[in-house]
Amino acid sequence: MKLFIIMVTVFLFFSIALVGSTQAGFRDVCCEIINYKTSIADNKPTLKEMCIGMSASQETQKYTSDAYNSGIKGTTKSIVMSGVPGGRNTERFVSIEFAIAMVKDDKPEYHKAIFVRSDQNGQYKIALVPGRYWIGPKAKALDPEGYTPPDSSFSEEIAVVNESVFTQIDLSEIRYAP
Image (cartoon, rainbow, N blue to C red; front, side, top):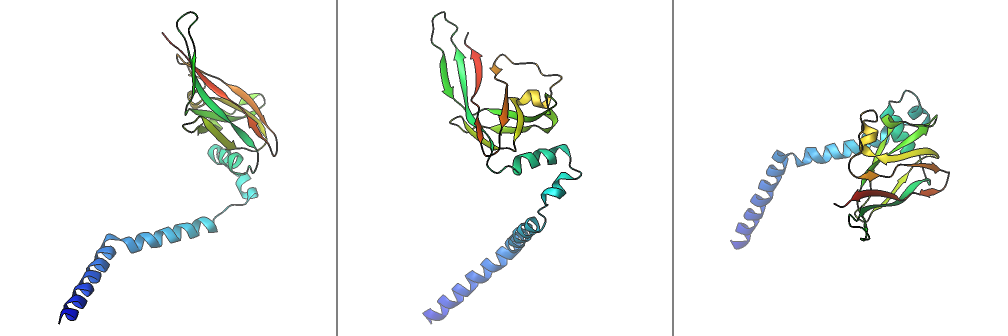
């Protein structure tokens, strides 16, 4: 008799769990995930397809995703300049978000900029195809015409990325103590 009650209880538990998971849509979610993975694998464009009829964001994605073993790496740090004559400046590695834009005809293509954030230790590494790149404040890339530098200054750099090399570029944000 005890065995019968245990079996009925287990049967009811699994029945309720099955009905609950079906009503919650877990089966549908799992199927959607499988279908999504399949559609991504089926729709990978070739490089030739990527180069034809791209928008600016698609082209930007191309020059960051096609890179294999070249790009820019480095550190970001914040420097606080002492406001006291003879005082010590303080420096520390920090996470900073900045922009990288390809340079064509000696002008950064701000509208195709990508945004990079260094980690909490100030380290960053981004794969890029070989070429010339402007590195600078995110706000300037978003609105180059109306950009007004803030109280702090962020170093702007031009970097040349060669094939099979990660170019080292260390960036600084300088602030002034009162």
